[in-house]
Length: 114
Length: 114
Image (cartoon, rainbow over all chains, first blue to last red; front, side, top):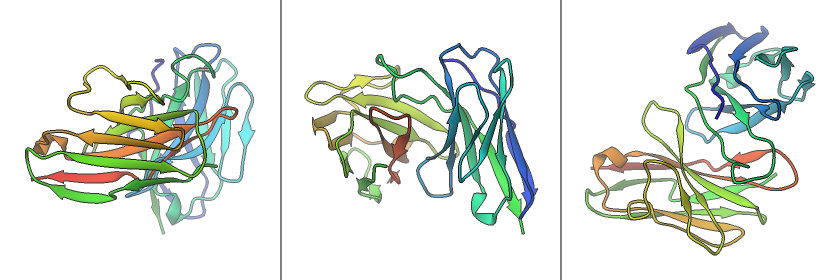
């Protein structure tokens, strides 16, 4: 599986935007970029995913570099509830035996200050 | 979306015993997976639970230690056999369905082996 690199930790203040970077220089043409987060004492939850174009949903935005070797998860206004470990994961295209399998790195621990 | 229930949510087990964790999904899913998250670590995939056949294990995990069943499209069990303190972890069930790209996780089963 292609590898991702994320900062170990980041801090933010409440109601400020947060930009969480991820490098994935060995991404293949068919890998989707997925972001999951794990709140304390919970299982991971889906945040957003994309392939080439920037994506927005109610939780966050995903900005993907033109060469797809990096991406940034954007939380527009951080809340205390956004404090979590954020995982950037490359996921193989649907089909084959690898569909549905996720390879987790260490992720970024986001701390949000009141 | 898929709602996943895991039982038990938490348990303290004696060394040398075995414990079976159940994963129940509220809808039929194509694929089910079991992950382990050791204290302070990220998630590691244990195996893919295959409906009606033997599970597919990742490197470092074996059937004798982690037998898995999946009798239908909504239910799976993971047994942690002959437990030692090193097995103290969170065990998580995840599911994926076609079509769609979202993978869902259960809340996890927190095991402490004493």
